[in-house]
Image 1 (cartoon, rainbow, N blue to C red):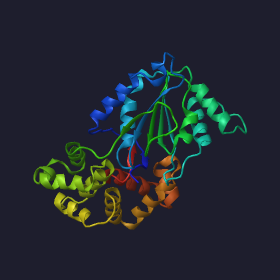
Image 2: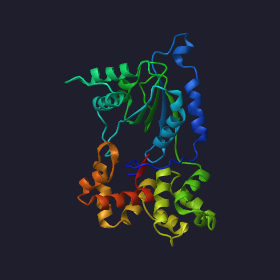
Image 3: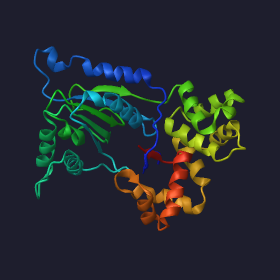
Image 4: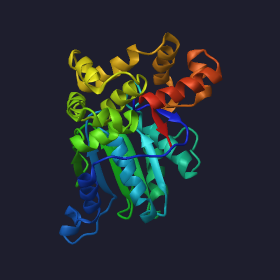
Length: 307
């Protein structure tokens, strides 16, 4: 659920992953297989950030994209290729959304092949950056890749996009303990961590270092000023399942029933984004109640804030 985004402006913080960022930036300049043969690359370079949900793969892609935006004056464009519920987004629909962002009119009755060709044509010559978030496989992403070596594609996926040539992969897992604890501290403050640093290390270990799990743990502690880091680590250890599931269920069970209802309905929000009016319509509550609950969800780490 932490992949869900609440439409509100906020400051963006990023922890760790400096080695990965450095490697990804270096891969942009590295000679490709085509240029090794003396031919100019016919398509955009594709950088792949692979990892499990909750690993911070999209945050890493967004951080990389933000740092490169000034190098791509043709603009930065995004397409999410997996629904919040886990179903693949049809390539034709992703193409329609990109065409709208590019300001290109969609021909009536156009099929997938024509739509994706229009996307590639609109991106050609623009020196643009395209972020393909949560791609399911190469067949879904490949038709959207620009036929222009001056463009760059940053793709996010669970695993390799076999079938797309010369992809530069970067696999991410958990954060290093120092960065994970820094992330935890943004929710708990420094006192809870400094009084029991060993417990903080144990907690982020129970979270597998996964940023989403650490955020959920931090939100749980932020909502319980009297709870200790050691207590939460013990609670997580007593549960079965993977780190992200354990952290999410613990946070969800602590919600009052109306808030839990809103959280469940957020998975139906279009494009995985919700504002107070959308949440109100989905959950059947007042806009003011939805706004307050969404703000609490961001504070507790249950959803991301969209900047």
